[in-house]
Length: 164
Figure 1 (cartoon, rainbow, N blue to C red):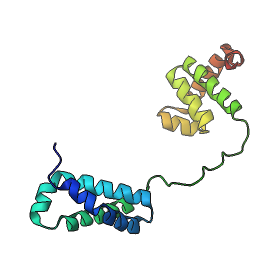
Figure 2: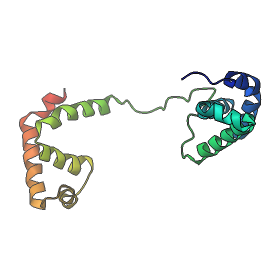
Figure 3: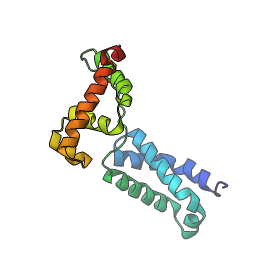
Figure 4: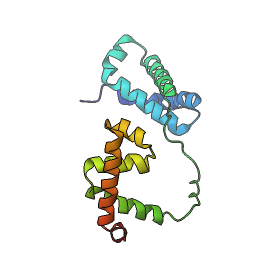
């Protein structure tokens, strides 16, 4: 699609005014630039109709304001620029958690899907036997037997060796 006649000249002549208005709306230069750019993207395909109606600046300014208002209705307003990066959180060594996660990824595939689901619900999600049975749509006895079989299978596979 070719650039509409007069669009580039309009943007070059009115860009500063539109940016100042957008900055007053947003309070941030980066958001103001994004706002003006988004509004110009919206009017670009209809530029011939807009100029035929009359004053294109009023239409573009209206588009800037309505775009701003729709942005403000969103729950998340996008990235917030900062001058300095936040410090990394101080905490315990995460290698134990990574090792455990790695062991789980190697061990869980040894189990049948239903056994795997029972162990995840019972021990990871910390559900009771009754809650696990309800989640799986089976009896309490089935949960107990599947738990027993899964734990026996893991013990037979020598879990300690696999975790290393």
